[in-house]
Image 1: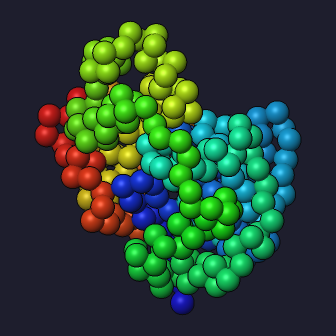
Image 2: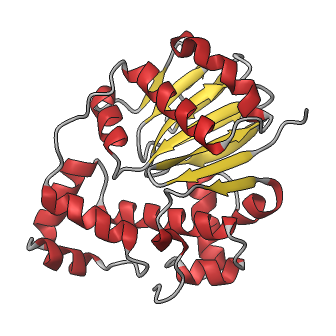
Length: 268
C-alpha cells in the first residue's frame, strides 16, 4: 500500500499528512501540533538556531521555524485561531513558542498514524484522530474563557464573508476605534487582525484549490494581488507552493467547510 500526501480541510482547521517534508523558515497564523508517524525524531529549528529533535511538538502561531522530517513521516494538525480548540490549546501553551513532546502521550492513537499515511482512514476517522491527539496533549477537553462577543462576531464575519473586509470596516462593525480593536483582537485571539485576515486568504484559497479552480482566478478571488503573491505567501507559511497541492497532494474538504470558503463571486 503506497504512502500518500494528504490534506483534509475542515471548518476549524486542517490535517496535513506526508511521508517527508523539509522546509525553510516558515511561520503561520495557526497553532500546529506535529507528530512523527514512524516514531523517529524530526528536527525543528527556531529562528535563533536553537534545535529540537523530537517525535512530537507543538508550535505556537506566528513562531518561525525550519522543519526537517525527512523519511519519518509527519502528521501536522493546524488549528484555526477562531476555534474553541485553538483557545484551549493556546491556554495550555502559556505563551511558549515551540514545545517538544514525548510522543508516548498519544498512546494507542499511534495505531492510526500509518493507516492515515496510507490513505486508509476516511475524513471522519481523521477528524476523530485529530481531536483525540489534541486532547491527549492538553489532558482536558475543557474550553478556555469565553471570547469577547465583539471579537467573536468579527471572526465570524471574516470567515463567512467572501470579500475580505478592510480593517477600518471591522472597527466600525465592532464600534471600536482602530487602536482598541487591534489591542482587543490580539488579546483575545493571540495574533493581529492583519495576520488573521491573511489566514482567511490562505484557507479560502486552499479550499478553492481542492475544487480545481485556476491558480490566477483563486489568487484574485482570495484577496491576493496575483498568483505570484499567493505562491510567496504559501511558501512563507507552509513551505510549499499552491501548485504542489494541485499536482501532488490529495486534498479533501468535508461538509463542515463553510460555503464562503468556496465562494468566488464578489470576492475582493
